Amino acid sequence: MGTVAPNLMEVSATASVHKENGVVANPPKELDAGALFVLKSRGSWLHCGYHLTTSIAAPALLSLPFALTLLGWVGGLICLALAGLVTFYSYNLLSLVLEHQEKLGHRQLRFRDMARDILGPGWGKYFVGPLQFWICYGAVIACTLLGGQSLKFIYLLSNPDGKMKLYQFITMFGGVTLFLAQMPSFHSLRHINLVSLILCLAFSACVTAGSIYLGHSNKAPVRDYTVKGSAKDRNFGIFNAISIIATTYASGIIPEIQGTLAPPVKGKMFKGLCVCYSVIVTTYFSVAISGYWAFGNQAMGTVLSNFMGDEKPLLPTWFLLMTNVFTLLQVSAVTVVYLQPTNEVFEKKFADPKMPQFSIRNVVPRLILRSLSVVVATTFAAMLPFFGDIMALFGAFGCIPLDFILPMIFYNVSFKPSKQSLIFWVNTLIAGVSFLLVGVGAVASVRQIVLDAKTYRLFANM
Image 1: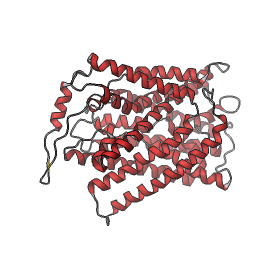
Image 2: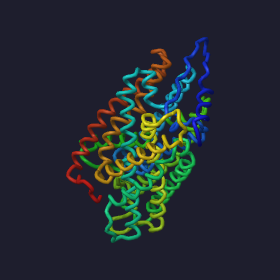
Image 3: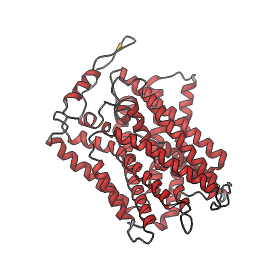
Image 4: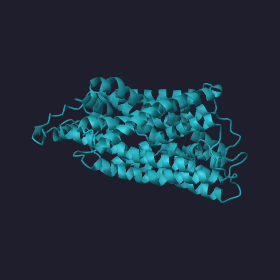
């Protein structure tokens, strides 16, 4: 870390004019402060794997047993596997497009840059940029809420008669995020995200072990794997479950993560994705299968709630404390990762790329603006403890377009595969089906908000 000089060297290293198939590429533009300071291109493929894993394999995976209650064994496992295959394919397409653009002299470090150069300026400025910003900032609010709930859970385990309210724990978690938000760049999170990867494996192993233990004990409920509810409820449940599974695989910041790779980037993203998806396959399927096997259609929104039982915890207190500490620490890393697009926007608008990164001119606005963004997110999380329902609606409109639709469009527009080719129709099919899911998922999310609206209260102690 230090001054601008090393970054200018990186720019000059990648600024050479490429010649591909007789076509001379355009030299890239000079980097702005957001790309120069936040999206430093210094990482290896392993670092990329750490970032990818933290952005995707988050505590939201603990809702997968609940998703299976809405789909059953066959439908649930098919959707879980299919979503994994489609997202792995989709993220690889994004990587190939980014590599292709780099060969042409346009190294794109942000999602909005891709949309601007491939689809036109309006797409980046008015659609992809704002959509990604609000999805990522919404994820920060949701993670802050989840962190506060985890803290409260730990508090009640050690002090069952405690009187502290949820908003107090959310504020505590926000204080930790306030400190972590000052990490200067995405690349500087590489060690934190390695620990996050290990924590994800740890809490998933704990949940799997706890589910298997309870499944073989007399404490487990009578298992019933039928899908509950009326025909209407079951139909809405299918789309709700698909939205849950799609959201657990969502990232929304793939170009920014690839932007942290030191050039040349060819092939590095694929290795990083292999690291990430080895963790995903291990954790997602173990948690989903063991949780649904143990609790059947009584699996709750998060499987940790099933461990608490109706009157007393079904597992030893020390085990539940350990599991929740792992979850709490990992969600703090996820929160900081999803702050990076916000940090990059602030840095681009208010920092001076001609001054050193750690000069007073750049440090003061960085400290103020990052702190302000965390304070605002913490305030919203405390005010709106039902934000998860709202985030489900945002997810339908944001996660699916960014991760399931745009990569297919970017590839078809950039590489222009023949309309008789398999890849053209596979991409078109995925984009079309995903577009339908956006509409249906939004309807299902609005319906859930209406059903839960009677419980909504500002600063509720949920």
